[in-house]
Amino acid sequence: MSEVKVYERPKSWMPNVSSHYCPGCGHGIAHRLVCEAIDELGIQNDTIGVAPVGCAAMIYDYMDTDYCEAPHGRAPAVATGLKTVRPDKIVYTYQGDGDLASIGMGEIIHAANRGQNITVIFINNAIYGMTGGQMAPTTLIGQRASTCPLGRDVKLNGYPIRVSELLAALPAPGYVTRVTVAQPKYIIKAKQAVKQAFQNQLDGKGFSLVEILSSCPTNWGMRPVEAFDWLVNTMMPYYPLGTFKDFD
Amino acid sequence: MGRVLMKGTEAIAEAAIQAGCKYFFGYPITPQNEIPEYMSAHLPEVGGVYVQAESEVASINMVLGGGATGYRVMTSSSSPGISLMSEGISYVAGCEIPAVIVNVMRAGPGLGGILPGQADYLQSTKGGGNGDYNLFVLARSTLQECVDLTQLAFDLAQKYRNPVMVAADGFMGQMMEAVEIKPSPSKDQPADPSWALGFMGERGGKRSHLHSLFLSPEPLEEHNRKLQKKYQAMKDAEQRCECYMMDDAEVLIAAYGTTARISRSAVNNLRAEGLKVGMIRPITLWPYPYEAFKKLPSTVKHILVSEMNAGQMVDDVKVATGCKYPVSFYGRMGGFAPSVGEIENECRRILGL
Image (cartoon, rainbow over all chains, first blue to last red; front, top):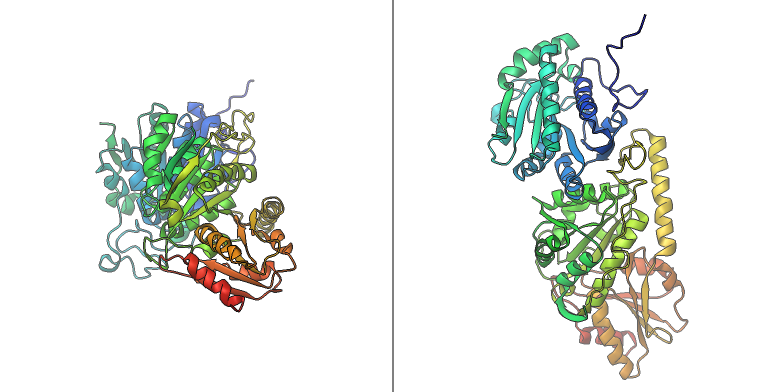
């Protein structure tokens, strides 16, 4: 009887390496989607990733492609430098919400506004994960975090930033979409979006950003299943899924 | 191209292009704006790209990414802009990425003014960013030297995989002088695929990742030891210094950049009067030319440091000479430079005249 392999690790995932992510964290799924896109497009040897500061800072321990570190928030600028010198390579950043939407808001807006032909994978889990659950620019109104123990107060902290809608208001960025890894049916769509964002770059189309709503059970103080439910029931109403721009 | 009359900033820019720099990431700040302007006009002629960054924070990180490919990249700024770049410079050094950074220094602190200064000596040579790192700091006193050291900067950056700062002050940036700019012999030096990003295929599928993050103490200390070994090699091989009229000097002026240029005139005038005055001029502010200071002639009785700041190099001179000589300081701040006459008077005062 011949064996049929139905599941294996992506080729662009480092062999024999397990990730450090907490149980129920969405980073592992998002990493896998990036790896699958790289494998399916056959671009492993031509891809250069730019790592963020945050839980995914060690992404280069898992991804078997060239990788460059960036200071907190500066990944789009680092990617701009890489892509400027090597337009023949596929350059992408992988950033969390503290990295991209707080300290790095300047860099992402301007990279998007230049229509830089790069791919941005943006993980929005409404909290600072690596530093231990502080309020992020994406933390929901009323959501508790270690630096807003009574819940986010709009009078003090303003409103959670909808990055995709903000960037989609600019003329230059071509592809801006929001997906989630909360449930399998959404993961299938998320995979299509991630692959599309890399394909756009291969086609020389310009700036693509995929915002992935993700979970952080540890810092949300929930079990993994509760966390995915909260993501669907509480995060998704504020951060609606959908494609805001598609090179139209 | 023979000798042409050029402004300092433009000479630096053209020298960089002739050194094979095709990628420049800039942000406006006075008094260095002619460098990004020149690059934006002339890089496209050589198939290069000028990118105007949204801030100095972004421009140094574009340099980080561009330099990570192993090709020759550059940025320029002036004092407050260099402060903003300091985080990035620390990362560039920590990731061992070659890059050239020009600092056309102005007077500080804070916004200070747009007039020339040398008040970034300590920031450039002792750190600026976090962590145990060093970068080459090259100081010049003529525009021809601006050209030559800019080209040297690219060679040093690639040889040591390290950032190099070319420190000019506003006078050097804004004055005009005849220069000859030849293509650098290393102009077409390719990227080193053994480490540079974008060569995974050439490495047979072996990836490269450039980072300064090591969460465990053992590899982080190992990384630091490796860097320190490299810095020691830089100290051993790359100290540069000019000794002028030093052989029988009783008073030795220690100065760099514009103040060295002024001091040279003072030395010439005092020598014409028969006074035994010389000059030692560090060209590499880091690595500091300790070896040259070890070989001072026995005639030296006093060292006068002159800078356009409050005396930031004085401690280095004391350390370099083992505190064997009295060291005094004469400088100006706020955009002023010491005049030839002021330095002459200071030397006469030291000589008891």
